[in-house]
Image (cartoon, rainbow, N blue to C red; front, top):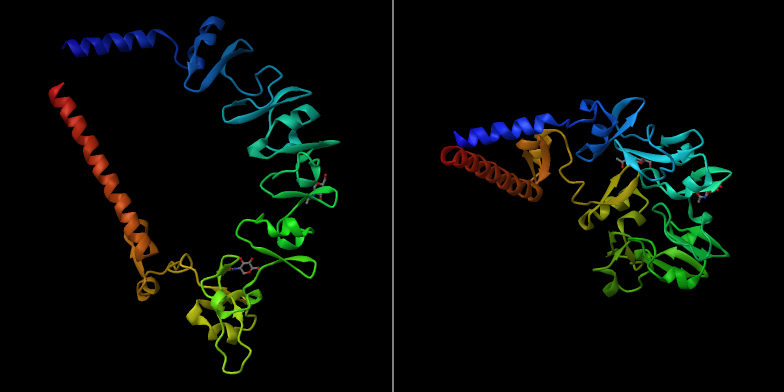
Length: 296
Ligand SMILES: *[C@@H]1O[C@H](CO)[C@@H](O)[C@H](O)[C@H]1NC(C)=O
Ligand SMILES: *[C@@H]1O[C@H](CO)[C@@H](O)[C@H](O)[C@H]1NC(C)=O
């Protein structure tokens, strides 16, 4: 009985104060409310959720109602891309969806070439290096023109090598000996040594086989012909069918009912474990509730 009374008093107290912006009727009340992460603002004689549109400038980089704000000629406005920003200062400060912008007569998406030598660094997810007197983007080995940069591991998952004054992707066929070939990976592919009866054996990877029949010859190394190229069979590609019959016909796959999906046995059992933990958590939750209700 006492508990219910306390609860009643609490609810009454809480109800006496406005909790949401629209419940406030005076400017003072409006200023007092901070509703969760949202602030209220007194705008055009009503109390409103704070937004870019009803905020004061400067507002560069502030965010309200899930929108990013930038100062503009018309006042504060919400922006979704660099091109919506209309002045140099805001262009350098505001990053719509994390994208860096650059001012060049208008506000555009920044790329490597916009950096100076001292500020040459990764820009909008692209690696940049300073070479040939400018900051340039490197996406593949052949974009690198200096030997020293070529040999640093600058591009994720790609090994570059300097040959004939050029930076090229290091491929399995550049590995001369059988011993070094096996157990080596190049550009996320396994290398293997071919086993022809005639003498021209060499170190290769699936993607270097350009003919379907040769590709199929090396299926024991995981090569298979797909989409006009020879690709290495990866486990993620396995069990990707959406057909239940086809799925279960493959020994390494199971049809996973909770997701209605074909999965490898390994990933299905991982999912099962996550599921068990979830069910256990829910049962515990219900028990705590029951205990509270009965004994409180
Ligand atoms: C970088 O932006 C400029 C415009 O300032 C554009 O001309 C150039 O093509 C862009 N470079 C890259 C690599 O996207
Ligand atoms: C096949 O290649 C094309 C062009 O390279 C690509 O757009 C497509 O996604 C590829 N399909 C598969 C299944 O890999």
